[in-house]
Figure 1 (cartoon, rainbow, N blue to C red):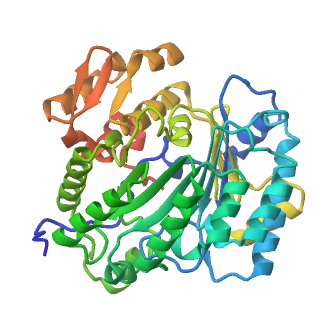
Figure 2: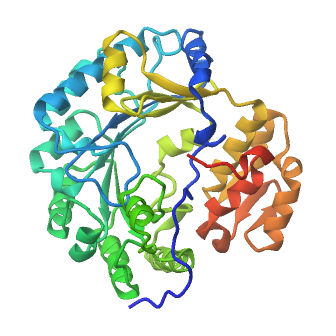
Length: 436
């Protein structure tokens, strides 16, 4: 058993994925994204697509995404109809017209929740408006228990190049305690089908710090993941954003957090990295290792972290177009109603200043463990080594990073807690606001 006596993980957002914080995006700024949609774009900027499929068999107790459980075929078909209408509306806008998608991401929820027939329909109908056939990467998130051999073949047929399988843990008791819909036998069946289909890249997800985790079980999970030999292994350290089931139970009943403390989770993460490095993996970011750094590129992440365009489609989706942040309506009823009226379902937006865009790209690239400052300097006309001299010096003294020539390289200590370092680079007015 683990011997974690440190404070447990409390409620709040830890994982940084954008800047300025989402809480600063407002409905009164929606005109900014409409102006952008109606403008001729800089076509040298890579162009991507995020599609949110919000359906799941169950809601995990730690999930903070917009999901809907146990939906019938008609609800799903109505949602696909709305997606097609949204694609049609977007494709007519100057910012998207005649542009080729460089990358696409099917996220959720559970994209693999929908049937093979619905996936084919989705591809056939949506690609009339936005075609991902030429994309360098098409990532598709899967929950093991929603897959069968035929559906995996359908994923290959519709152009998926990178499969991400949400394993999270191999212990059935822990999976059940955390509200996961699948059990371990479904993981192994699904993985066999995925490997047989020969996708260019396969990723599996693990989570360090689930309810009930122990030292012994954690290392067994890491060993099993290595035995499966995927191209990428992503490991998240569990957090408790405000709208998870666990967080709500804590607020309502006053119970203490059931999640391991950050010190223990970082130790587990560190042990996992050491074990995987010994078996030929390479660190790709603060939460991902890859077998081959030359070929196992996560193109979606690389573009997201460097300010590329990302079309948001589906309920609650986040996007970024020509330097403007935006998010769709986060209730499925509102999303579908607005789309049915012939309007794009944008609910809030924000146009960051140039300085804020600099901060965004700098801090997101820090999550990769190494920041090459020259490209950032060339893009923004600002030297990050000068702009962020004070926090860089602070974090260097604390042993979190080193400056090596023009590059900033995080130490293992820094990489294990990189998200906790990033707020020091925020503008002062954003350091204490709620993140989401």
